[in-house]
Amino acid sequence: MSLTKEAGIALRQSYARLAPRLAAQVGRYAHARQFKRMRKALRQLKGYAGRIRRDLRRHLQDITEGGLRDKVLEALWLVGRLLQQTPKSKDKIYSLHEPEVDCISKGKARVRYEFGTKVSLATTLDEGFVVGARSFPGNPYDGHTLAPALEQVAILTDQMPALAVVDRGYRGHGVNSTKVLISGMRRGLTPLLARLLKRRSAIEPEIGHMKTDGRLARCPLKGRIGDAVFAVLCACGHNIRKILAHLRIFWTLFMCLLGAVTGRQTHRQHSAMHT
Image (cartoon, rainbow, N blue to C red; front, side, top):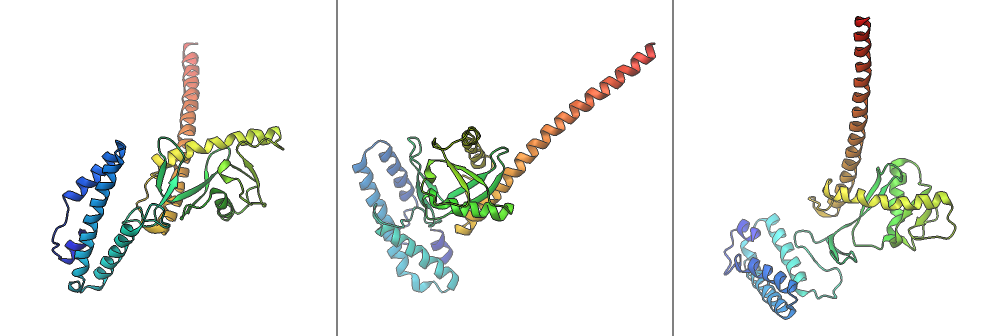
């Protein structure tokens, strides 16, 4: 609709009022498990999109500006792909304004799927500082992302990690340069390695803080390059917040110590005056 207004094209019918109302009704039907009504509403919604697409194609000769014409052609191509795709199609489009979005299966009852780009995070075992953040478009298998993630850590820290502790999704990673501990393994564990393996769960709250406090859950930057840059920026902001938290603790301890020393000196002065 914004492209038609920018090009000055008057459509026969814009469905600006009917389409959002019908899209909301589709969600209600799905929530109520009334799938027959949901499919009927989806067909009607696809009919609206097809009519607008055909109407806009008839007005292509009226658009003379090159840049605007390219935007309209790209939008028509994306809508055409959206109307032709089926549930079993590959490289499906989930968002018109961000076609690179992937459907990531979470396997949780509350949130079965997430739509976005997969991000791999590497933190230190003790302090939880982020030493690697890399986006992986295309929703690859977790085990195939371990080698590139360790490579980024080696580039940023100038040394290859000697130990990596990961969850069970990284089985079959194929990494030989670093010793990898997978959550749930028991064979060949020393007491020290078993204690380090328990530290793997410490990355979960770090990821939660980055999603909520660092806004990692919603990327405002465009395209795959924007996803990669935003992941690194969120990691930098997370480290800065942790450094500031440590500084606040040190400052509080310093002020308490200074107050105690000042109080002792004042007490000694008063004792000397009384004697």
